Image 1 (cartoon, rainbow, N blue to C red):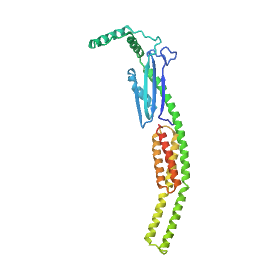
Image 2 (cartoon, helix red, strand yellow):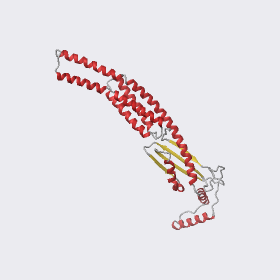
Image 3 (cartoon, rainbow, N blue to C red):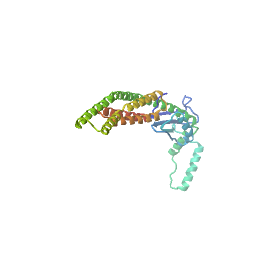
Image 4 (tube, rainbow, N blue to C red):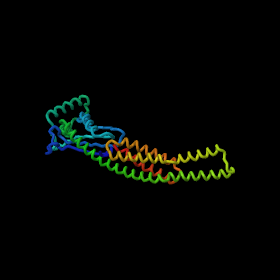
Length: 304
C-alpha cells in the first residue's frame, strides 16, 4: 500500500447550466458548484464543513464519503454556489415580486424609515433565488468525490516524497551505528588497561599487597564502569528499530502512529548512547543521531 501524507489540497466544480456534459448539466441546479478540500496533520481525523445554507442538509453524506477514505488529519471542506445564468440578468417571477413586496411592507410597518427596494436590489435577489433553486445532492456528492480522489493523489505523492526522505535518514543512521560498533570494544579495552595500570601503581605504594576488601572493591568498580560504557545493547536496539521503520515504509497504509512511537524509541536509545559515551568520537555519533532522528520526527508527524 502507498504511504499517505496528511497534508494536501484539491478542488473541483461542476459546469454551468447548458453544458453539453451530462455530469455538468443538471436541470435542478442553476449555477456552478465549487468544492475545496484542505488537510493538514492531526493525531486523529477532524472534519470541518463550511457549507452555504442550502447545502447543510448534505453534511452527513459528505462526512460518510470522507471517512471512507481518510483516517487521520485535520480536514476542511468548503463549498460554494455561484450564479451562472447565461442571460446575465434574471427576470424575477411574479411570485417572487409578490413575496418581496409583502416582505417590504412588513418591514416598513415596523421600520418606517427603511428605504424601499431598488430595481438593482430586486434583480440581485432574483439572481440569488435562481442560483439556489433545485436539489444539489447529486452535484455535491459527485464534485466532492472527484475532489477527494484528487486529494488522495496529492497526499500519496507527498507521502512518497516523505518516505524517500525517511529512507535516506535510515541509511545515514545505519552508517552511524556501524561507526559506533567498533568503538565499544576499544573503549572497554582502554578502560581495562587503565585499571591494570592503576592497580600496579597501588600495589607499588603498598609494598605489593592490598587488603582483600580493597581489591574486591577496585575490581567491582572497574567491572561496573566497563558495563556502563558498553552500549552494544543500545546499538542492537537501534538496528532493530531501524529495521521495523523500513518494514513499515514498505508496507504503507496507516503507519503514522506506529512510526511516531518508533521515533521516540530511537531518540531514547540515542540519548542513552550519548550519556554512556566515554569517548569524544562516540559523543559526536550520538549527537549526529539525535539530529537525524529529530528530522525524521518532523516528517513522520505528517504521515497518516
